[in-house]
Length: 113
Length: 116
Image 1 (cartoon, each protein chain N blue to C red):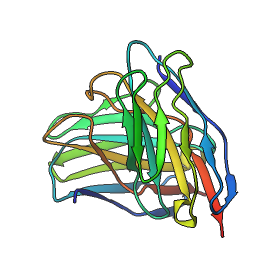
Image 2: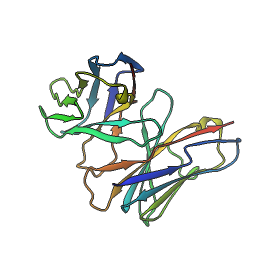
Image 3: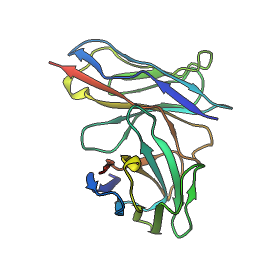
């Protein structure tokens, strides 16, 4: 079956530090990969996605590259801000949108001024 | 933009009582609603999928008589936890797909249920 494993948080960084949140997956076929972000009191929002190997998704300074050889989709940002403090979820979908997403456990990021 | 409003955000109830969680789609019609549950430090786990006007499809191991899902309209889906017990204490979140289909999903903000 499908599964997503992401690093356990919380991750605490100072403002302007470099961020990496690791995500690896297990799936049959060729899944689409996603990062969602949940700010306090809000629903999950799509941050970025990649639909095939070597694709790079990017948004708001965040990036993640679909690595089929390592089954990974690590999230990175060169310089985090306090406003990036949130919970980040890695997810996959390998049935062309017909099924629900398979999520990781989420990683809480805390950015300190 | 499209928003899913989920209520309540937090509920505390006594063991044996029933709790209803609502998810409303604002500015769009939700043909499919997914209900997830998350225990501490674990993944969001899919509980069931419901399509408007039809019975929900439950994932293996999820009791359909305990977790009643109603999706009677294109803008409202409810999850009722019947005869709640402490082991039902969890974070519940809904996710809606609109009439356009595809991969775009809209999430509620979640409900933290605590059963005493």
